[in-house]
Amino acid sequence: MKQILLILSLYLISSEAFTPIPIDHRVSSSTTTTVVPTISLKSTLNQDQESTGWTFRGHHVHTEVKKPKQKKQDWKDILLFNQLSSNNNKPSILLVHGFGCSTTYWRKTTTTLVNEGYEVHSIDLLGQGKSAKPGRDDGVEYSIDLWAALVESYAKENIKKGDVVLAGNSLGSLVVLSAITGAFSGDTTTTTELFLKNNVKGICMFNCGVGLNSRGIAKEPRWNPIQRQLINTLYDILSILIFNNRLLLTYVLDKVVTPELLLNTLQSLYKYNPSNVDDELVQSFYLPSQDNGSVEALSQIYCNDPGPTPYELHDKHNDYLNNLPIHLVWGDDDAVTPIEGGVGQFYLSLANDEVSDNNISFYKVKSGHVPFDDNPDESNGSFINWLNEKVV
Image 1 (cartoon, one colour):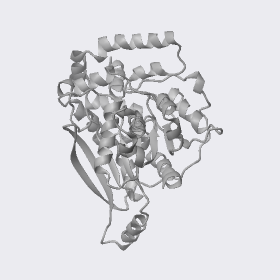
Image 2: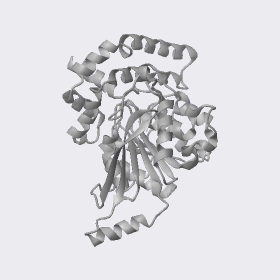
Image 3: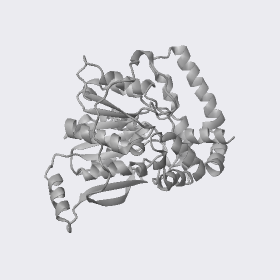
Image 4: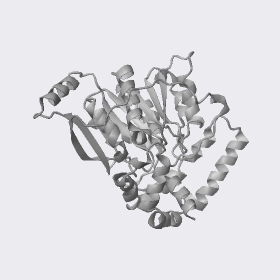
């Protein structure tokens, strides 16, 4: 029984299930990658942190901004601060978390980026973390498009310096990809009005997901129409029995999901260093699950349209994305979005494509689903090296 609850809890944390390997994109997962030097997380600068109450379509969105701050009493830090500040070409960084997560698990990434002289913005997506959790009665339908529009609006209103780099984890990677292509805007917004499409200098994706929920698996290239219909039918049944069963979800969040169970579940996702799962991280998952509106937000995310897949976005916006620096950092022991799965193999094949002139790089790291907090030195080191070599 405990194992069943653990598995259910794991699914509640992440809406992307295992994505089978599409034959069309299958390549070796033993790709050789350049070893990057690890970066110490020891803070050399104070961080000026601002927690703000930004509003999106009338709803509260939790945001954080951290900037390098000079230590006036230490001349060595003043020299370092001046050296970092002298490079005025560095873009702002905007971090977008995955499903059920929040700004909290970017803690080590933020420290690393700030110490390198970057201004860092992070947000809790609507319906997640410390942000509001409105529902249909409030006119909110959760989707990749909704969150992509949120990211676009936040960047346009709050990142005063034009150049920006976006980073996302899991489902957040798909949100980032949709936001920078303007895919969420339909035909109602012209390209010149899109802030991110005109100002983004690159994106970094950590263990990219396939969709808003696991129904996105049905869009994988490997399936024939009959197989695709069977997958959708199975998901329809699961939606009726579980995902759209508000009474069951309420019971699970009230009685099943406890800090102790979340501790075990999160440790199963942190394959390299489970000890990094501390009380701060556990509470960042547990407390939002107890908020009003969390049940409907959870149900909607499981049951709504999964949105565009990375394959579809690359196919539709091929010319634009080929000219944009894109970096993938992927945990090699991820059971949620495995490197052997469809999206992982898709990006590996693009990174290894010597014929195409795309600007995609791929770095494999010893880690689970959250490499930047599980194996932060190596993962964030790869992020920094890519920024310095390809973006700045």
